[in-house]
Each structure stands twice: as structure tokens, then as C-alpha cells.
Length: 440
Image (tube, rainbow, N blue to C red; front, side, top):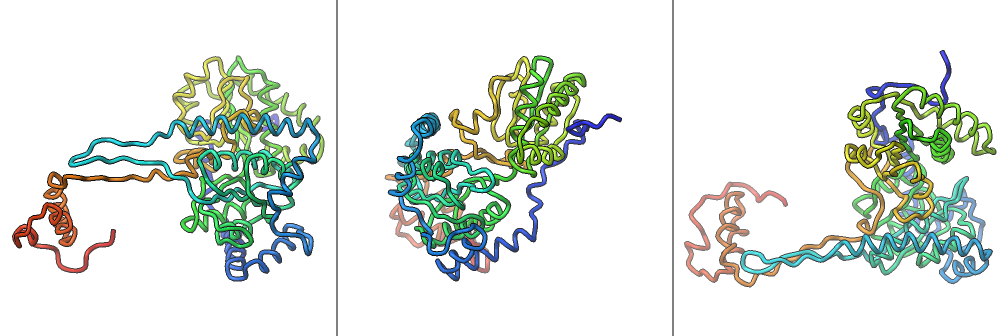
């Protein structure tokens, strides 16, 4: 049997996402880092940063905004212009998102009610700095926070490059914590070396993801942003070389990435497989070795039926979904579970990575079933309000419902607003349940 670059499976064999099967060993390390930083403060944070991030002894933990600007000023003119163009496109999209979120003010029984969108006071943005530093992630995380109206935004990541510092400055960050991993997330959450943040977002490795999940509730965060995923759906209109290039672009992210393909016919899959082999052989190192390993995580399905294709894509629930078919919008309407959708062969996923407009920080591991990519919404709270001038219309129903639940003080708090002073009105006639009131 021919050995394919992507293993061939059926639509029914598409694996369920496994991101939620968290590694207890990773969690244990993250917990240790969180507790060390929480209890040991800056001294502990510095020890972890020196051991795991290569922070030079005596180097500052935090790079100030002025130094970030100096990094920007030192860039070659073409690099500064590149960052500026990407910044402008991402900022325009984030501003358009924010403009969609209008306050609500409608009439209610006895008055009015509504909501308003209120930004958090302070946000933390993680910017990966591993084998491939990602200045694009500085833009993608800081820009929507600033568009949402967050007054202070702090970045964190190990060994930030000049380009990363420049991107963070351009996007509007107030400073950059030179730490990575779970200890950086803990510092942002507890206010160690930088002010305490209300929301922490951004992609990262397994320890970053574990720390964000473990600290949720102390801080807010977005859906899990783990190893990159791409599912391409291709029919006879697709260019095999383009599909192969897009699969490899995701494969080179990390050995844990998952590139996958659904082709409508076997000859299409065969053409893409041949293109994959040729392009993989032409990649430089270490990209080739990384991509070769991650291709082993992927799969290829042969399936002509659009309904079955949609079922398989929905079960996969990928981070990125490319629809390289003759009618991509029609198929996209059938597929609900995807972090971001790229319609047609011209819509390269890498365009989304590098500033076409929408955010590249997206839910992975099946989280696109219930979560969306990073946006201004992650930095806003839809705070509701109620202004009742005439409580008479609500008081009786409120009191009746409160007594149905055995909460007599609730009932009296509603009825007292109608200025009924008789003991019968306040005490009521229904019996309350014995025992303490249930907690809300």
C-alpha cells in the first residue's frame, strides 16, 4: 500500500478534539510556577525567568514604553512600514467590531432597562517568543484591547525581539514583561512586577495554556489557544500546489500542529499529496523537520457528499477552516464549528495570520464549538442596568415569585416600594419553606 503524507481515514474516523484531556504533569508544573510567583513575588519571578527564559542577571524584568519606542525607531524603514500597514488593517477591523456593539436603552414595565459595554481596567497580552518569535501576536492582542477602550495594556513573553517590542509599542502597550510560561501568566494575574491585570489573552505553549485555565476566575481569558489546526476542504476547482502550501504553512508552526484535508475525490487528494512531498523537501531546516512531524498528526478524507463533509468538519471543529471549492459560501453555511473561515482559494490562512484584519488568536482543540476568536468582546463587559420609576407593575409578581422560592425578605423588598404599609401586604399569606434561604 502506498504511504501517504497525510494518513487516509474516513469521515467517520475524524478524531474528536482532545485539547480538553489536559496533561496532569503540565498542570502540576503550572501550579508550582503560579504558587511560587504568588508567594515569592518579584524575586521568585526573576528566578524562574533566569532559569527558563534566559533572563540575564541584573536585566530589568519590565521593558518600559520608552524603550519599546526606541526599538521601533531602530527598525529598518521597510520593517516599520510593514508593521504600520498590518497595524492599520487590524485596528480598522477591531474598530468596526467595536462600532457594532451599541448600548441598549428600551422601555420596561414601570421604567427602562438596557445595557452598556464597559472595558476592563487593565489587560495582559502574552506574546510567544520561542523558536519563532511572533510580533504579529503583539498586534493581534494589544490592538483589540485598545479598540475596546482598555486604559492599560501590558505584554509578556520571553526574550522579546526588537520587532516584537516595536509591534507592542505601535499597538499601544504600556510595557513588556520579559518572562514567559506559566510564571509570566501568574505575574500578570497577581500584579508581580507589573500592575494586576483583569483579562489575560494570547497564544502560548502548553504551560501558558494551563496557567490561563488554572487562573480563570481570578482573571478572565479567551478560549484555549493551543497548537495550530487547519482543515482544508478541496474539490476539483482547487489548485493542489496552493492547498499543499497552506497545509505546510500550518505544519511548520510546531510538531504538535494538525494539518488536515477533506478532498471530494481521490485523484485530488493524490495530487495534493504529491505537491506536499515536493514542497516539504524544498523547505529549509528546522521548518522541514517540524512540518514533517506535525503532518503525522493530520489526516486526509475522501468524501464527495457535501452533507457528510459538513458533518466531518463540524466534528473536527478546527481552529482554521479553508474552503477551496467552487461554491465556498454554500458549504460554509453548513459548517458551524470553526474558529475562522477562509472562503475560496484566494483567501489564504496566512493572510489572517499577518494582518488582513480579523484576529489570528483563535480557539483550538474543539473549542470553536462554543467559543470565538479574540476580539474587542474579550475586553468588554455587557453591563445591564434597570431604572424603574413606577414599581407597582412589578412588585406583586416579584413578591409572588420570591415566596414561591421561600425568600420572604425578597418579597418584602419588592412590596415596600409600593408603600403598602399593612401587615397583610408585607407578611403575605403563603407559607415559606423551612431552613435557610438558598444561595444565589
